[in-house]
Amino acid sequence: MTHNKLVRDKIPEIMQKNGQDPVTRILGERAYHQSLCQKLQEEIDEYLESHDAEELADIIEIVYALAKTQNISVESLEHTRLQKREKHGGFEKRIFLVEAFDDDSSDIDNDL
Image (cartoon, rainbow, N blue to C red):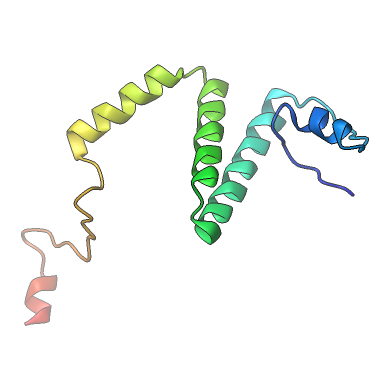
């Protein structure tokens, strides 16, 4: 069976223990980053389908790996997250922005 996808580090070992013979290769930096992005999309899609906490954990693991490819530590990423939260808030209030108008927008006059 052909997979052609990034897998967690212990997957080949687990496959061998299950009697399979995995064929692997180590990715270069660019291919690794691209594969992480593809894996992120895969895990997001899986979460949206299942709403399973394990899929959320996979998403976080991939985000941490992506950060590392950009020399961003988990601590730095968390610091940035908290700064952004302080400045713009989180998502707890469930605010859904429908529309916005400029103060001098003629769109308001057109709706009257």
